[in-house]
Length: 219
Image 1 (cartoon, rainbow, N blue to C red):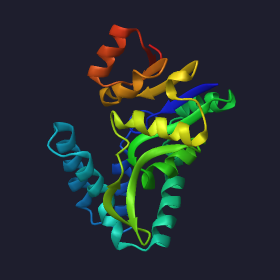
Image 2 (cartoon, rainbow, N blue to C red):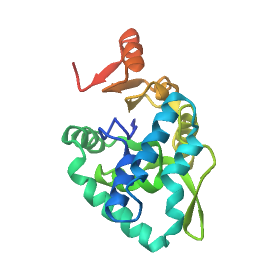
Image 3 (cartoon, helix red, strand yellow):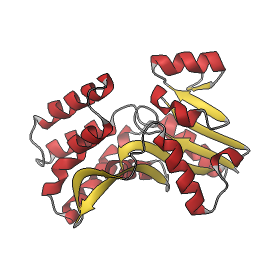
Image 4 (cartoon, helix red, strand yellow):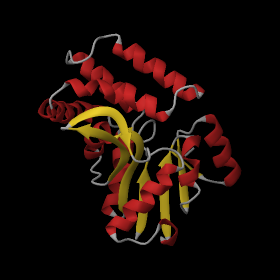
């Protein structure tokens, strides 16, 4: 069996899911309009290395503590439906080919599960490895439970997931692939037999060319 793993932001989708979620909530009146600029500033600082993944997660998820769990569930379902038209056809087709081939597929993303799951459903992905948001009485606190599903920690999350399923470890698959756009995913990309750079950032593109990795879309 082939193992097929997919990053989310700027890989399966050509945008940042946290920003899409923030804009969705602004549109519902759940967040003030200035929340978009605040989140964008956090993203910039994260890229610059002055804001860690915990702070970025808190910026996206912390405000949700004010809402009842039932309201959050309703918004998440509505968000997933609203995003359907924004899921690229070529990426839907890519995931579908893996699923129809009987491959073991999973989304592996640093995004909070609260945001990632509605998008994963749009691609038909049942397995979601994501950063776990702390919940107290069903309300997210903005904190992260365990290791964020981020950079080298993605390797840990994949290993734990395979163990829970009773599957062989990552290195035992005859063929495994991971699709990603980011150099930050290099730790997991180097653990699979077939890493694929998807519209890669400059550093990942250079690494992919040097090591003869496939790129998607081809050419």
